[in-house]
Length: 342
Image (cartoon, rainbow, N blue to C red; front, top):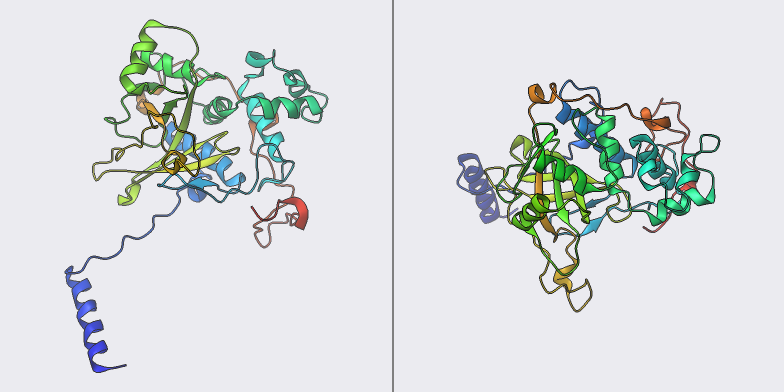
């Protein structure tokens, strides 16, 4: 090593030690591997995040990065490929419907009755067709809230129902509604966007609609599982039926803990294509509502939730494992159990 190089390295080390040179920010750890074990925590916010994290881990941890790009997708809702707990993916979606108690709301859909069968709950082809043809993101959120035993939350197959409840009847709801560009997210909150082609509502447009109408509205909500803990300027959210799985979304935060420039859906309505790459950002949505979880003392005064129903009332015991722990006693999944090249 030459004398000049040694001198430069010594000066660089001295600069770092004295705070003269900037250090590269350390990558923050995903909170879910630790949170997933806290499903019996005394506070509702931790239980909510833990339930969502447990499912994200089961789906092999797919995520959307801060630039809106999908990474790590291993298994999709339509497949019989196994989740990390050894259960076929589409059957786990059926558990969300059954456990949340929402099948009765969608019983008119073809195949729903097959999913409700107690004799062979998820073996009929009709049930699988129902899973593939029916949006299940609200069923996932409702399942998480029941798994977390959250008081004051009305399970629904439509996100707009609990968004409307937070807007119109905040004293009876587990959540208070806020503008996502003004409110500060915390663990256990819900971040929601409107899914209406060709129109951006934003918080103001959504508030106007909620105050004057009682009909349906296409929406989607993700569960906040981390929001800047430990100085990390990244919010982590978990949602169901996001790119055909239970997927984590990463969004940047400001130094004050607010969302930093939430990307808005393009007004032009351009579809993602090689001609419109800006539209391919999966974080570019019509973000319209932040549902903020009420304090624990206030939640304790709300109506208790009904229990989780069916076999999903407890975490599924692994039938085989992919990332096996030595001494666990769980056999390794067959080599062909998971799709290759994803």
